[in-house]
Each structure stands twice: as C-alpha cells, then as structure tokens.
Length: 298
Length: 287
Image (tube, rainbow over all chains, first blue to last red):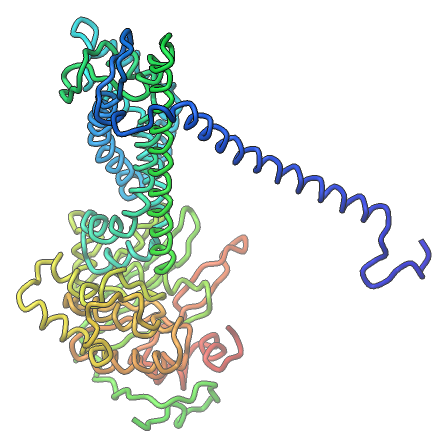
C-alpha cells in the first residue's frame, strides 16, 4: 500500500470492512438470541393464560378440585394451593435456617480446606435430580408408613438447601472484610461480630437467594408426585396426611378427558408462573437494595 | 507549640514541622507496655518482618515509619493479634504486654483485642447510626451502665461530638471521611482499651481531618498509649514521642523483608539519626 493511502485513522480497506461486517453480524445474532428468549417467555405466558382464561376467576382459589377428575362440576384448585403453601412453607422453615447456618460456618468460621470441601458437597447436592431426592426420601420415611405432605416438605428442603447455602455464601463474601475487622478490633467475639455486623449487612441478599430457592421448589413435581399424591377431596391443611399441590394438579388435570379440567390445569400453570414472576421481581428488588447498601460501605 | 524540630540539627532534614511534643521523661520513669523480642512475621514461608526488638512505653505516642512494604502494618497487626485472621500467617519471637506473652497458650485473642484496640487505615464505620456505632461495642462488651454518657464522652474525646450531637440517629455512612475516622476512634476508645493501635489512620484523609486526629491523639495520650503507623514523616515528627524506622532489607537469593533499623526518641531520629539509612530516609534521599 502506498504512503498516500494512509490518513490518520487509516483508509477503509478490505480488512476493516470485513471486521465491521463480522462485528455487525455478531451483534445481530446476540440481539436475536435475546429477542427469542424474551419472545419465548411472552408466548409461553400468553399461551398458558389464553388456555386457562376460562378458569381464571375467584372460584379457582376458593373451590377445591379433585385429583382424578371424573366429574364435570366446575372445579377450582383451592386444595392444591393450600397443599403447596403448607408443603413449601414447611420446606422453607427447614431449609432456610439450616442453609444460612451452613453458609455462616463456611464463610465466617471454617478453615480454607473445609470451605472448599463443603462448597463441593453443596454443588453435588444441588446437582442431584429431584426425582432421586424423592426416591431417597420415599425409601427413608414412606415405605411401610404411607404418604405425608411432611415427607414432600423434607424432600423439597433437601433440594432448597444448597441453593440457600450457596447464595448466602456468595452474599457474605461481598461483605467487606474491613467491617469484620472493625468488630474484631474492638475485642468483640467473632460470633457477635457475625450476628451484629455481618448478617445485618447481608440480610437483603440472603433474602433474595432464599426467595429464589422458594420459587425454584414451588414448581418441583417429582417429589410431590412420589411422596404426596394419593389425596382425598376437599381442602386439607394437615401435613401428616398427603396434600395435593399445584404442580401435581397441573400434571393430573392436564391428562383429563374433560376440557374443563384441562382449562383448570392451564389456569393453575398460569398462577404458578405468576407466583414465580412476582417472587423473582421481589428478589431482584431485595438484591438491588442490598447491593446499594453494600456499595455504600465498600 | 512552636518548638522546631530541626533547630539543633547537624543534617538538613526535609521535615520542618511544629510539634506539640513535650520533652521525653527520663527513661527510668517510662513504663514498658510492649516488650517485643526477635519478632519474625511470615506469610506462608515468606518472612515479611525479621528480628524486630523494641519496647513501647506507656502514655507515649510511638510512631512506626518506613517505606512501603517494610512491614509496618504487619508489625502493628501483630500487637493485637489481628494477623491471626490471615490464614497463612505465622509468627516467631515474643510480644510481651505488661510482661505477659500475648500468644501464650490459653490467651484469648478476643481478650487481647479488647485491651489493645485498633483503628484502621480506611474508615470502617458500621452501617449503623452514629450513636449505635459507638454504643454497639459497649453493649456487646457489657458496658451498659450510663451508655449515653459513655457515647457522649467518647465522641467528645474524639473531637466529633459538636459536629454530630444533633444527628446521632442518622447513618454513620453519611459522614465525611474524616468524621468517619474520628467516629472509628470514638468507637475504639469508648470501650476503654489500654492501648490504641492506629494503622495509617490519616492516609485517606485531607490535611484538616488529619490535623484533628493528630490533636486528639495528643490530647488523649495521658489516658492511652498510642502506636501509630504512618508513611507521613511530618506526621510522625508532629505527634510521636518515640519513632521506629523500618526498612526493607535483602536476604539471600534477593528475598526482601522488613527490618527495624533504628528506634529512638523522635527528636533524635529526625535530627541526629545514628544509622545512615535512617538519615537517607528522613532527609528524603530514599523512599
């Protein structure tokens, strides 16, 4: 290339043009992928809402339904919502304090070697398929005793635990070390520093992780199918008996021959999606708030 | 107030500062707080500090000066076992506090830090209200009688009370950097330690905030013993009674470690140091 071709920024040439085209191409592909992702969610929610529209009314929440739909009476899902509430509630009550304590041990107290080991274990547990957890709990507590909602709660708690623990560990890692040193430098014992300084600072982030874990298990089907599926009619709250749940209701009603039942299944699916959406948005709000708090003191 | 450090000097120091320092009492009247013998501090297998022996005296301000990487911070963090928090840290030699080995079996690091408080390089107030920043330590450590008065006293001693008395319930993170650092000092002295360690307490502050912190050290040394790390020689000359100069030495295979070069009355260190390296440092030829 002759010297006259060179301006300050270089003249457009084949290589530059090719780079621009490649850059543009990658940008378009990435944009399209994002668009497809958003569109998928839109179509999914829209489709579910449309199919369940005829059943999306107050009676969905007030009338109980039957698991094996043989009637053509208008059905609701009140018993499924009640069951899910009880089972997920108990699972949360079991997994949350336990998971947070595991995280506190790992990030505040454990020597480095144990830290790595516990993290590895948590990863492995997080990777165990829900059906395996379900079978395990079935073998552990249900064989010869019959189904209970409590067993399902236990299985869901096992699934939740690593999520709660891992997300809490990550949040605790964001708490600046200078705050721990401030507490310890006063001659305050480590546990008091953890409770009085570190945890209040991280609480928003811990809630975020917990809320996402709740959303994650609320839709789990395998454990409730195996552990708490043989249910009676009417609304029941006692976790010592089998309880109907939303994922199971969706599964069972969607196989029904009656259009009315299938619409109920769609409506249940819509409520589940909305629940997860609301919960995720709440979690994001908590997370943003917590990040602001952490950011200010960093 | 107007005593000028360099007046009687034979060398020409870069540091010409006014000091409030009183003449040192005779050595036999000084009470030893820390007796450090052959201190060696290691991170993993690398020594950060070797062969440090010195005595810190009661109700004096002792400054640690020296170039970056000479182990000043490592040294001061040994004095209240703050380095215990570093997983790879090990230590040789002994540090005696009023005759007791602070690392002896059965000595609780929490109890050590309770007696030997610390103020850090960057202001690190708790994300709580101004009041709670001071009150929290008091509550946790069981000093709940007259809590309000204790908080007020500490804030007054730290020269912060007048600035914050009308907004004690507001978040401490809304204070300026200098105010935050004085709040951290208030929090530390509120729990009535015996010694206050300060690791470059003014390095992140402007000159006015720095001056306030130096003044409060001067005013409080009748009650506390201060050890201060600083990379600011003027600051050492202004506030310190005793000054220790640390520098970097090279061992075999070029391994660098921090070493105590000279420890003496501040006056002497800045006007008539006995080691050439100290002279080079305080006259600005090195570091």
